Length: 239
Image (cartoon, rainbow, N blue to C red):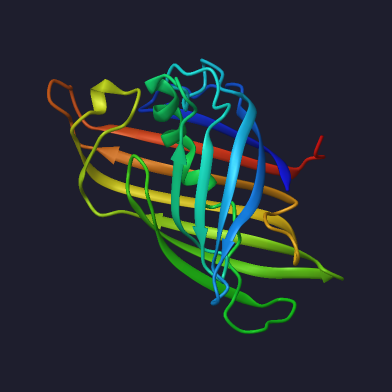
């Protein structure tokens, strides 16, 4: 399967206004590498035609992620249990740092299915841990909105919370070593999924997180960060 990925981000620190920046874009080719007897499987994907605008809050100096190979272990319910990546030969360190910025987004491109058969209007919940600048606990509720033949329309809502800990935010030296005082995440999405598909045909989601940090060494006071991530996935035509 071949798809196109777009990730946008807006960051607001304190009272400073947030600004719009061009999104990160990439094309991916993904296939199943292994399947076990319990229905769990491993996927292998490669990124190309990617662009990391220098003004994006997710960029770290790298201009693209071309050639990055991503391997994911997915259980029978469609939940990503492991995700690793391999950089192309000769890749600069900035490429690894840039990929880490979008890793948590890629890990959530699959849609968890319920353990038992359900009908239109059914809802089910998934609790999982999400790695990132702040390691969070995430609760996702999925609703089956409609079905036409083998195509499902799903809507998702999610909430994130986190334990108080020391955090390090890439690209923000002033926040290095700051203590997390509060964290909240809220999001929603809509997915078009084929029952025989490996990844969604279409996905659009938004996640907004608000992070309050205690004053790091040398800072004047606490810092509040508001980050809005938008993700879009569409099916592309193989060439």
